[in-house]
View 1 (cartoon, rainbow, N blue to C red):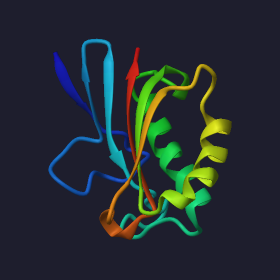
View 2 (tube, rainbow, N blue to C red):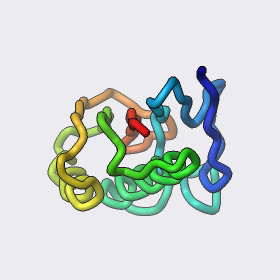
View 3 (cartoon, rainbow, N blue to C red):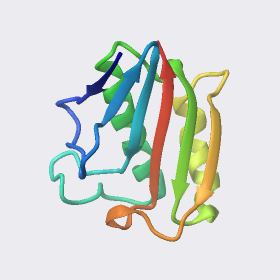
Length: 126
């Protein structure tokens, strides 16, 4: 059975989608942007490191709604506005995700919503 996950501690979805859904033991988190904690209409302050931290914070909060942690993440997709930012993203990612790290795809895209530098989605298993 599939149902929506909507964490009240993170910004609402900015379109017609759920923050995450479940299907059996799997949790599918939608692509998350580095939305500011106080103002859901702007991105968090800072560059790629700060935006990466914020995206992971948001994913972590969504997963917590179904008693999952970052350790339960099996796969991530990362979308970057500039692939040259990958080293800095990796620094944050390495610190936040336990080993064995999730499987991962990283792609450069021409543009992200709100002109974010990063967007990330993931699949976790509970």
